[in-house]
Length: 305
Image (cartoon, rainbow, N blue to C red; front, side, top):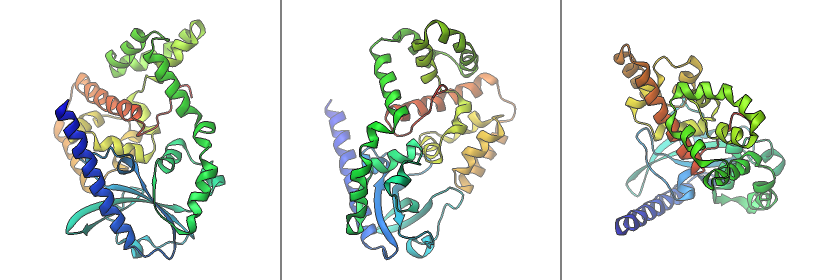
């Protein structure tokens, strides 16, 4: 327990240090055309962990007008292949990278049109800059949506609680989630329609916990990037071997060109592979998805939502 507490203390100090560097970075920015800057993602939550494929601090920048020259304000985007403006700089002689989500200022009527990961990325954020407290005023109108609008997130949490309490048959659900391989899960999804007629609660619980590899293509870009940071390159190369083109495209679009090319080279070097090895790698990625979803870092829509 002592080691765990020490680890938590070190992480807290590290995250606090990153926040301090970020505040200095924001203080030095030209903000004439910026309304609000938010600290988002894992640094805002306090659970930052630099993964193997990146370790940027997430920022959300809300602009006053649509024609915003990000290169002038932040510098050149070093990761143009992904849909965020990424920069690296030195603060107090220490190198730090930022992944910046640039969008027009979010009024409450715009907020309601976002998908759930987009909503939560704003709601979990910390305000670093807010001219005339405009975002703070809008946020007070948005807060009620945590319970009223984010329905599938609430349903997911309710399903998790019911599953853990044994209400749906904990043994069955755990077996489905942990002991079936990818091909078996695909077969089970077909059969749940019949089960739904007999016991809809168990059927829904199975489908809620039955994330398959093909569902990765339905995740938003930010979720894909979080998954990549938790996945080593060998596992990724094996999982993408012979994967559908839309999944490969989704993954590579959220990587730097250099990292994507390295993974493609690894895939080619693998040559012919056993289906069991591919499924094992995909199952590892699925476990990562479920773990991140359980911690609230990504939102996964189930088969039946």
